[in-house]
Amino acid sequence: MPLLEIESLDVCYDDLQVLWSVSLQVGEGEIGVLLGPNGSGKSTVMNAISGLVRPRGGAIRFRGERIDRLPTHAVIDRGVAHVLERRRVFPLMSVLDNLLLGGFIPRSRPTRAEQLERVLGLFPVLRQRRGQLAGTLSGGEQQMLAVARGLMSRPSLLLVDEPFLGLAPMVARDLLDVLVRLNGEGMTILLVEQNVEMALGMAHRGVVLESGRVAISGSAREVLESNELRQAFLGVV
Amino acid sequence: MSAAMLAQVTANGLSLAGLYALVAVGLTLVFGVMRILNFAHGEFVMIGAYLTYWLFALWGVDPLLSFALVLALMALLGALVQVTLVTRVLAAPHLNQILLTFGIAVTLQNLALLLWTGDLRAIKVWYASTALSVAGVSLSLGRTVGILIAATLTVGLYLLLFRTEYGRALRAVAQDPDAALVMGIPIQRVYVLAMAIGAAYAGAAGVVASVSMFTYPLLGFLFGLKAFCVVILGGLGSVFGAVLASLFLGLVESFVGTLIPQGGSWAEAISFIVLLLVLLVRPRGILGLE
Image (cartoon, rainbow over all chains, first blue to last red; front, side, top):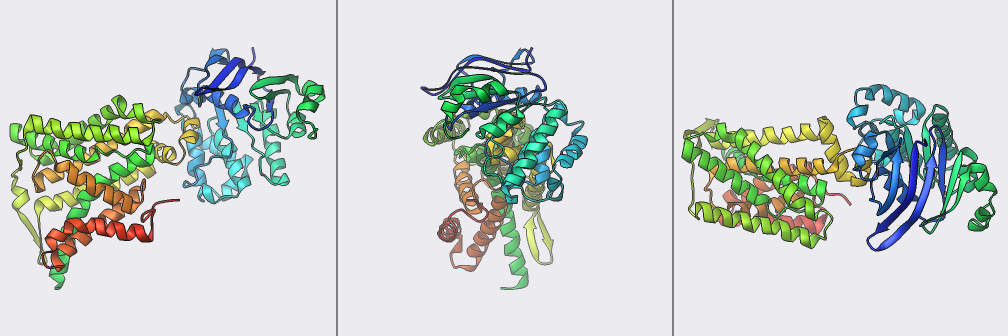
């Protein structure tokens, strides 16, 4: 049984349908990657998983349990963390407050101090900045904070939406290393990314969305070598 | 102006400021968290005042004793208003939100008029007329208690917001609701909490007002108007700004009332003049963002 299973997902914003029968799976311990041009519906898939948007049809299962009718806090409580697009740290709160909020759910509170140490070990720069307002951090530091904050709830599935966007190559490399390392320790990751080669280089599975429909789906290698991908991303690959 | 006079006018201003702060922090908190302007906020003050009055008139419960009960009842009323009414318009256009809260205000005013008539009600307690004199400054014991209550509750709100788990969650929701959602914060519960606190604090102002002035169905209108003034002056959504603006307005009103001939009649208008002047220089208010 895959850890995350999405089956013919339909999502509408008012009268506008943005996802058409999208299906995908991510197995325990895998890195899945969602690819596709801007506006193809990648973030909507992520938002549907964490319950920020309600699907009109289809099913989302996590560990075999339907989660598509649950409120967001219940989804998070079951072990999903969602690192939103564009970082979305709480700008007027300290780095420490941001991290503590990441461990807000009751399940993660008893071990929050330990987890804080672990996360600060993964991102040493945040330790130096812990008293600083999150809004005053650089873009790269904010992205690290956003990922670190997501890890605070000890998730078994980490959703990360375009974490490398706008980062300096060195910073992106560091972040990528952390994600790969986390996966090595057994964490399942679903990543939204625009950079096809980089994403498929680290992932086990890939799904390419096009105008809200699945265009290609399969193992990272299959997706990378498919002709459709070359067509969809003409000039990119 | 003599030193004693200066101290006296300052003391009067503080007493006014405390009352304004109690009303304003709730209004600004609710706006900060939900982005809703609660036009019925002043009416919460009025209900709190009537609750205190009736507990006193019917069963002789001293306002100092009924204080905790009134706060709890008002928190309950706030939660009820949130769950049954406000929650329905959270995603609606601003005009619908304004119509709803304005409708609640008019309903509560008329309900009070219907149930309790338009008579002016007063609570006579011994400490309201007993003056406390220190170094030539005299302030009624009732007013002193009012200032103490306002100061305690304001510090209490600060501690709640900055020293508790749910306070941190409240601030998170105010800054970015979607990001707060994915932290696993049950945002609807946070909304109920914010409205309950807002109503309870307005109720506290009602208790203080019921002792120091008359209680009548339109009492809330005056407080609501003044609270809007304070909240905009302090910066919409900023609790600390609201406290600063309350102090500022309370003191200004007190000094204008004393220093200017026939200043008493100017005191009411001065808040709005100050508001206009500040907004001319700083449109976002004292501590407002953006």
